[in-house]
Image (cartoon, rainbow, N blue to C red; front, side, top):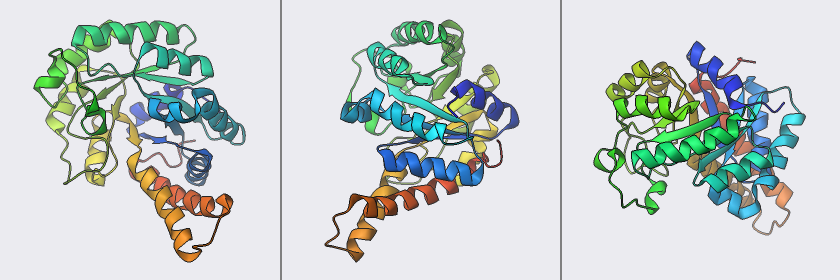
Amino acid sequence: MLVSSKEILNDAFKKKYAVGAFNVENMEMVIAVLNAAEETKSPVIMQTTPGTLKYAGADFYFANIQAAAKRSKIPVVCHLDHGDSFETAVNAFHAGYTSIMIDGSKLALDDNIELTKSVVKVCHSANIPVEAELGRVGGKEDDIHSHKKSTAEISPFTDPAEAEIFVKKTGCDFLAVAVGTAHGIYKGTPQVNFEVLKKIHELLNIPLVLHGTSGVPDNQVKECIRLGMAKVNYATDLRIAYTHGVKEYMRGSPDGFDPKKYGAYGIEEVKNYVTQRMRVIGSCGHI
């Protein structure tokens, strides 16, 4: 069943587990994530980035996720990840997405606040929750640089005092914060700054969001959840798992040409990965 992120993240925040937010790039990934959620009895968030939406459109991905949700009693959220403009956010909102992220983290603080407020106003009119971001989570996001000075350019971490001001002024429902993780593939072992996260958690009474979780050691992920992270994002490792499955099939059947056959291998690899992550973040059995 299709639900809003607020319905499941507030419960996770209260009970100190997290909901996995998994980036889906095609129908096979949607099937795999749903299969994992059903097997573990986990609520789940399926999300797409603006780059993914350029490939096929918000309406197309929403239709895939909605179809999966209708087949199941699992609470499924359709979420826009890293909405990069007001227009992108509103487009996903109109397509039917049940959760919207607006990412103004590359902007100066005041500009980020104003952009986020504008998206919150639209989405809250229909009871659709909004995730925002303050501070710069590194990695693939950094191909666009702001020319305005902000805390995100001075420090790699979200400023707790700014976070408190930001949430009060914007009314956002969830906040993604920069605490030492990055998008993409890590060159070394990431180290979360738990002191910064603890201070943010103490000042805010809303679910926090961990971006760039692929590759973060399990013990650090669990500590992040204890300190208020209720939504945990995974993207890169799902792509790797799907591609590994397709390559595995092609190695055994180099003349294969049926997408359903190699797609099935990709589904199984992604399902196995997602199942493992759901066990780590503690979402199993919460429906």
